[in-house]
Length: 287
Image 1 (cartoon, rainbow, N blue to C red):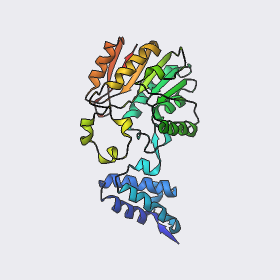
Image 2: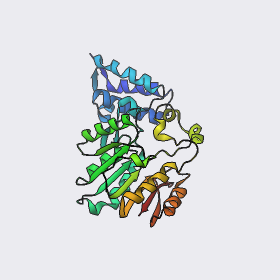
Image 3: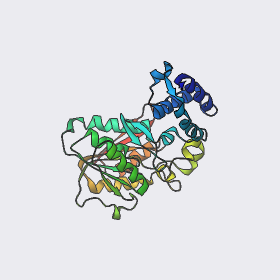
Image 4: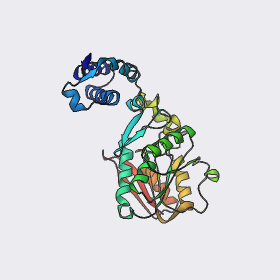
């Protein structure tokens, strides 16, 4: 016995529309069918049959989605910069804005693809930035730090999944005396998407973010939105080569303050960079 994939898609779409807008529910339904049955959108639209003995496996996933759990966690994976990454509730879900940050780095350093660059990713989470840069710059030495042991386990799995070498270190950027990087390390590039959301902004965020994504990676303690950037700027002064670059994703409400902070720390050139929506989202600083 079999069931039409088109009919199953329609059923899932109707269920998800209880809490999701129609177009978002449609996209999630396609993702579920591809994940569970390895069936493409084209095959679904063509009503390709699925053995009905397998269809029950999708019900627990729909139940989780109806509780607002992000689809990336439900599926355990997401696509970032053309590569698959494992994700779970110990790491942030990689965002399109972070892909933009990586794209900017790859473009800026495109003439150095064959150079043995030294790169550090601060607050690596899923490892999406570090792993992607290791893949894009195959002769680079890439280090990545995170305070969370569980996040580092996910990042290590993603390095294996994408067949790259990254040096992962459990360390807290707020405690630079114990950061654990090699002595006399001199970096060409630092990159970070640190916690930058203040607690006051929590009520403005979607439920599927605040209820499921790790607060350790999202929020700064108190209302000091510049806390992590201050420590990143300080670290860069000691480990970046002259002319080395630091790229950071920021809270759009504090991007100019982050730029000013790096200038106060003596970085010789800084730049605000907008995201695809025209918002000030990134800061580039040259030592």
